[in-house]
Structure formats: structure tokens, C-alpha cells
Amino acid sequence: MVSTSATVDAVTIAPLERAWQISTPLTPVGFYPRFGPLPAVVEVRDQTGAWDAAGQTRQLMLSDGGSVIEHLELVDAPHRFEYRLSDFQKLFGRLVSGARAEWSYTTVSGGTSIRWAYTFEPYPRARLVVGLIVRLFWAPYMRRVLPGIIAEIERRA
Image (cartoon, rainbow, N blue to C red):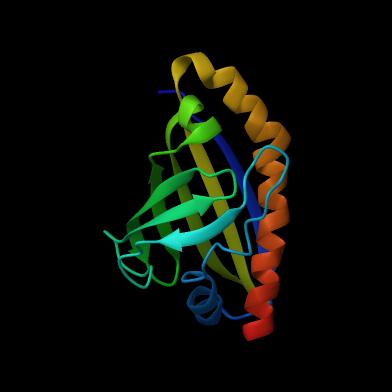
């Protein structure tokens, strides 16, 4: 299957362990606003744990009335966590079969580097459209979201 990806990086002054402790369990509500055709995350439902162990799930309710399910697949504290997204509704439900996200944390001089990679799995006939959405909206959206998360880490650290 051909996928479409975007990756963003940022650095926080917080040390690795603290950056991990603060950001990993953050609720996406308030950090993932509406952006162009991308809906905001407005609520988290049915979370099965503290978002700290493989096998946990949660449903993100979106401002367009749709939702998506996140499945936490890997937790390698304090370095990496990965989750799969499924059951997209509305626009993405017609375009993608799923997505994967990976957050990586690395100690750097003066703090922690955080890398957020996101890969959509478009349906064959939707590859071009998904590629355009990722390039025009999703990648810029990620560049807007990550600084807010960095600010929250630094506020709490």
C-alpha cells in the first residue's frame, strides 16, 4: 500500500524524562484545533488507560461530528510511542483506510528533541487527494500543533 507522510520536529528545554511525562498523556482536546478542512478534536471518549501502555484505545470526537479510534501499539518510555488510527469518519473515512503516528524523544544539548511523524494509508483512488491534503493542510497543521505542545511542556516543567 502506498502511504502519505508528514513529519515535524521541535525542541523543548525540558529534560527527556520530564518532556515524556508531560506530553505523552496529554489529551488532544485544546491542542488540535480546526484548521482548514481539518476538524478540531473536541472530546476524548472511552479511553482504556492513562495512555501509557500498548493495547490502550480511545475515541476522539471531532468538531465535524465524526470520530476516529486511536490504538496505542508501542510504548518505549521515555523514547517513543506509536499508535494506529482507524474507523475514520466524514472526509477521511472516504479517503483513508487508517493512519499511524509516532512520537520520538531524544536528548539534545539544552533539552529534548521531539519528532512527530504521521502516515496516512489512502485508498487507491484517493492517493492524489490525500497527498494534496497532507501537503496543503496536514503538514502545516502539524507545524502549528507541535509548538503548542512544546509550550505546555515548558509551562509544566
